[in-house]
Length: 414
Image 1: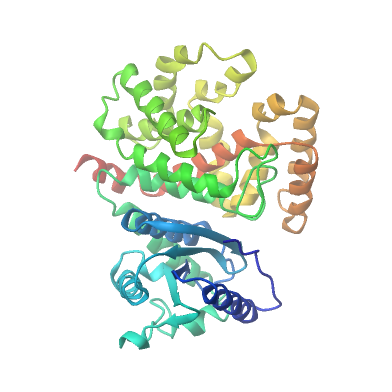
Image 2: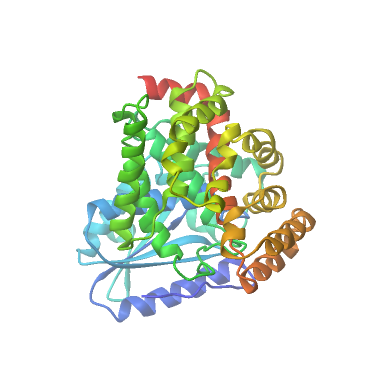
């Protein structure tokens, strides 16, 4: 089941076009079709807070049902999943009404259910019309127009982040991790790294595989607190367990050591810290204890981890302040590329390509209309700023931690 990303002159026409395609799809299958997307009527429906809410509910449904197949689109209407289920359509619609009305992320999602080409609606089940929780207007009207009020976006994002912060002790770390990784990888331009509408330069990874990776990663990160974080062996066991689970999920022998090492280091630094500023010191201390385990890596591979020697100070001193000032994930990625010697580029390409990417990123960081040029340049030249993208994920993670440090620590200690 594959649907190409759609485009149109207006959001209402785009949504109408999608409805026609979905009905046509549903007519040609015997199973129930569940369409899961965001319930955000703002300008940027690709905002990572919206995508995080959609993916989080998608993972819950994945745990609840056997999904026969699924696909997705990512266009001006945001991230949308198309799920085939061998379940009664009315029962599925009842479940999704309950999600929309009572789940803590229900305000952020919108679902449609189809059986043999016909939509099963709230009115079919004697349900009330869905109202937008912020604007108190019919949701369908909100989604068919564009609301450019910055307060609308601020309230929506704040409510999604509140859900993360209200997670219990065992889930809050995995929720924070997921939020950062969704932001880093679910965007229009990956600048050579895979995203929803393009594969990785080397074609070994794509967004569908990322969804599997993220699910395995966050499930195992939730177990951090059950490990003795004062034991180097325990931390390495945790990291190896996560790597093994991801490899098993993706049916690959490729290691995901780098993102696992870097992001668990941030989360362990948070758990062991006595204040936000102490996180960088804890990262440095834990890295000093663990760096012996990296001894089998060659010189270039080891340089990928060198940022940990300072406790990831560039993130705290440069990347996070830039993100907080500009509120743009893509601009922050370009900023990171422009200021960071990304050895993942040097290893897979060459240093001259790193210098070209740094120069181009520096000149385009504030020129949104030209970001596609950087994206296309990197793809054409085999440039994959993977490490910069992981730093971007950790930047989003640490931004959320900085703004809510006391709440997160209280949740971890309760």
